[in-house]
Amino acid sequence: MTANRTVVRGGLVITASDEIHADLLIEDGRIAAVAAHDSSAARAWDDAQVIDATGKYVIPGGVDGHTHMEMPFGGTTASDTFETGTRAAAWGGTTTIVDFAIQSVGRSLRAGLDAWHAKADAQCAIDYGFHMIVSDVDEHSLKEMDILVEEGVTSFKMFMAYPGVFYSDDGQILRAMQRAESNGGLIMMHAENGIAIDVLVQQALEAGRTDPRYHGEVRKALLEAEATHRAIQLARVAGAPLYIVHVSAQQAVAELAAARDMGLPVFGETCPQYLFLSTDNLAEPDFEGAKYVCSTPLRPREHQAALWQGLRTDDLQVVSTDHCPFCFSGQKEMGRGDFSKIPNGLPGVENRMDLLHQAVVDGHISRRRWIDIACAAPARMFGLYPRKGTLAPGADADVVIYDPHAEQVISSQTHHMNVDYSAYEGRRITGRVETVLSRGVPVIDGRTYVGRAGHGQYTPRGTCQYLD
Ligand code: URP
Ligand code: ZN
Ligand code: ZN
Image 1 (cartoon, helix red, strand yellow):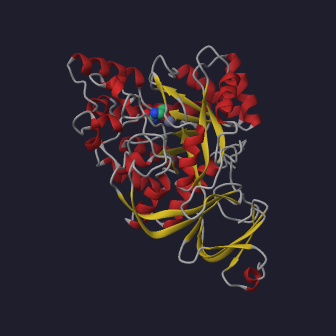
Image 2 (cartoon, rainbow, N blue to C red):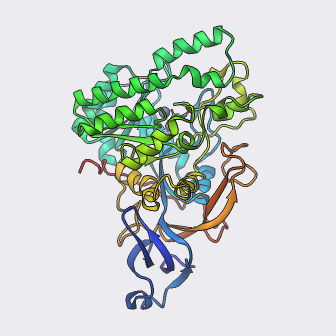
């Protein structure tokens, strides 16, 4: 197979808007043409290398808009590097990630961004971009936001949680939102009332409630909903758009739905862990619950219906992973006897496309909605569309050949993420990635990894295309 001229023949091409039995012509890393299968136009491409996709789906490569490769957090560092994490992403049918560069308190945005470029440069198997975590709002960092937007870092994560780490107060958030209103940036909000949560954490620990399940109990759904509501009001005051990350509580979905019913430019993301896992996992005995500690936390399973509904009604637009893996051994174990010391985060970058295909099989969403929430919407949200997230002439040839009938069982024994457990261990999935092209170049070829660190390119982004 060469990158120059390839035809993907005989599959069902699925995008967010269409399903069509079509052939794809790829030239020099881009989709050159899409033509009905076996049409005279498609038959004319007889000089190209052929990938036979008969009986398979042909879908855009996944866009995971929320990952944390090698993120220093909670006294340790996320266990996937850019190399291992992007390789695992490719195995799971994701061809673009948008990771988070971090501003350290007292330092510039630029210093944080440079540090993340140094980590990712020449390491990635697939394309990548950056959001910026803003942890120190002052005149200098506000000015830097303007420059970063111009350079293609067009979204800024802020935290109403984690006092003393990434936390910003309402005044700092308002100022950053005002800046985003004027420079076209998008504020991404971790919406949990961290000040109140810290009180509840202390009270729980003092009462001897130290097991992982108390992580879920103190990080109350009401405190996610309250912060979501407050973030929306602050964005209204600033006149800025807002994207709420990792929504898990049904009351938070309701806040988003109410804002969107008012016509406000407010958007939301959820993650597979909130759709497929619950507080039952956090309550697993022998400290196993630590494997499921993340923030926002897993919720009682009753919340899942509201999340699926939000995805169907477009009150939630995106499913990202918030991939932030910590090994059970030596990392999650740091919180034995004190749940507040368990590093927060779950692995999942390899599992997202499959889990969402299972949601299609289970009847939660349609095939096109699968591609929308996993590919097209994150590309639009983060200024990458139509280069990423769809299969149309001119788009990057980030193409996944997906076998919708293959059966697999998720396991840490077989996954490619650099983490010693799977949050979905033993889960049966119908569907599996077979072949993955990144800009026309095979990365996974018939379930064999043929990619390389350094193929993935840094991809500057435009502004949010939901506002166009
Ligand atoms: O638990 C999580 N979500 N860890 C990653 C950091 C964040 O807040 O997204
Ligand atoms: Zn967060
Ligand atoms: Zn995150």
